Image 1 (cartoon, rainbow, N blue to C red):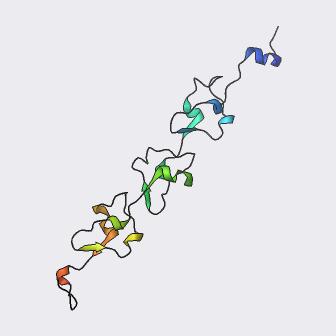
Image 2 (image 1 turned 45 degrees about the vertical axis):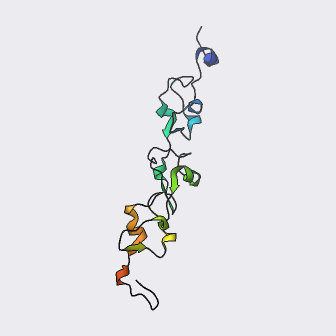
Image 3 (image 1 turned 90 degrees about the horizontal axis):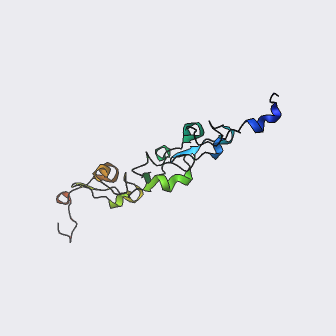
Length: 149
């Protein structure tokens, strides 16, 4: 006797779909995972690239003013397919204000140093152009009457 379509459930196993596949770290199920068939009926022998794709990384998120990417932003994955405002604390860290910078000799903090940010959580020499300006030396300053240099 020949098999017919009525024998499908007896003769065949239903192929699994990717929405039941567990993706590895930093990968997420593809947005259409419920429509992608696995290579086997329970998705255990399926190449994860069929069902999963790498999520966005923090380096693709634009940190707001006063924040910089965390040092490991190349490895940090965002929570979804694309980085959003919800990833800000995960991807960014607050920068130091220029008021915490130490300017080199002959320079002083810019007048608006409280509004300016260094390039990292701690102001360093690299931030001098941002935070500091040329300043007058005290020897060039003429003290007013009643004051001594």
